[in-house]
Image 1 (cartoon, rainbow, N blue to C red):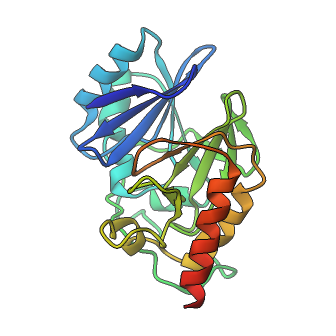
Image 2 (cartoon, helix red, strand yellow):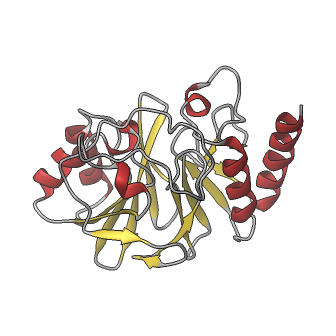
Length: 239
């Protein structure tokens, strides 16, 4: 697993050059953003030891797709103690079947929820609300890829932990569902592209300095990169 320091507070952990999770340094330990693929727990724990001696105090999930919650249960068992947080809407997709609920809310677009939701045995200890501060991260509801997707913004250094709201495969910031043809998986697993585009517009309100996505490399730059991504997505949606 490749480990890269991205700021004074953040480290990117990358598996197979495509799947990212993050360690965010807090005053009391680390917040881990997402838990990677199933079977990655040992590599994740070894990588976190390389970053520092701090304990992982929080496991913060962007959404419930398998490549983001795959190692949740094993990590929780290994850590022995940790808060587990996910958006209230997305929490319906976190349990294993038959408890998993893929039904839509009356106000949501009537599109099938897509992607792999293997579920987890570990229940969340905290349900995220839009706009709250969890640890050092501002929680931003960014539905579209999934109905309850969240992104997280570190106001200390301007890092946007975007999950799958955005992708940077190919080096450019792109709205999920409008990515490059040679990396179709996030788009194929996206629930509703117009909602994903609306969420990207919402992120323009943030003073972003760098983009830390679930897939793709870290990209340094401000909101102007997201503005370009939105314009590209708008043209594709119209065309």
